[in-house]
Amino acid sequence: MIKKYKRGYTQGVFDMFHVGHLNLINNAKAQCDYLVVGVNADDLVKKYKSKQPVIDEDKRRYIVENIKAVDETIIAQTLDKKAQLDLVGFDAIFIGDDWKGSARWSETEVELKKYGVDVVYLPRTEGISSTNLRVVKDERISG
Ligand code: CTP
Image (cartoon, rainbow, N blue to C red; front, side, top):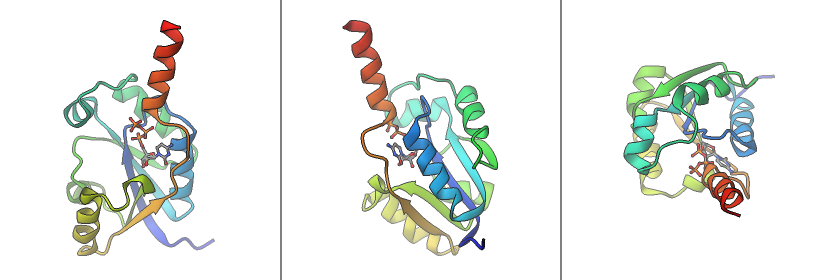
């Protein structure tokens, strides 16, 4: 089957890997021949989310690199997608549609277009997130 893109990229925390992450990755791979996944470094997450991932970066990467649809992983040290483009090289970048219309991704769309890269929004899986799992876990402990 001929896919729309040759080399795709997606990036996230992927903490407590869940079915929403899996759907995102599988939907991305359905549109590209080769999929690179950036797993956000612990220090990066601490900086922009002011919280520490439950699972450390090496284990998050280990899990992601063993997902069938994933061809390659990197530990991502920045949220700057132009820097990631220079590092990884891709013709499409995939992200959940919860980010559509946000200032950051609207700017990313404009910037990456200059290099012929499409920003592709994929449907977010309802009802699950790492944040939500963190709360459920805490409630179980306290309850
Ligand atoms: N994602 C998704 N569906 C979900 C959760 C995440 O499609 N239910 C997508 C995000 O849009 C992103 C990627 O998975 O493209 C990685 O997201 P990440 O931030 O690691 O996952 P979350 O579970 O949303 O984490 P958090 O609750 O900490 O924001």
